[in-house]
Length: 103
Image 1: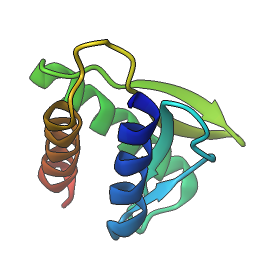
Image 2: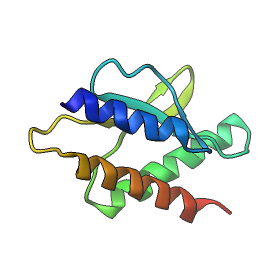
Image 3: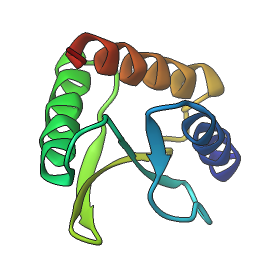
């Protein structure tokens, strides 16, 4: 079930302009990033601010890592009580935070 939710989230990321998947999603972790029209280092800084804004909101916790020398956010579906509505809410918060941070 969690792997299915992660794949659904990955589909939303892949379909949304301004975001990209950064790794395959064979299990329940999705590595993704926002891709504003800026140089790579500025994209990394933007994603770091985006992550902080989402996590400050409180209802979800997104982690991060570096892949191929880029700052990448990670959403992992792992709590036994996680339902689709929780993953949808995380996506809504991520998209809203991106909108708020864009100039």
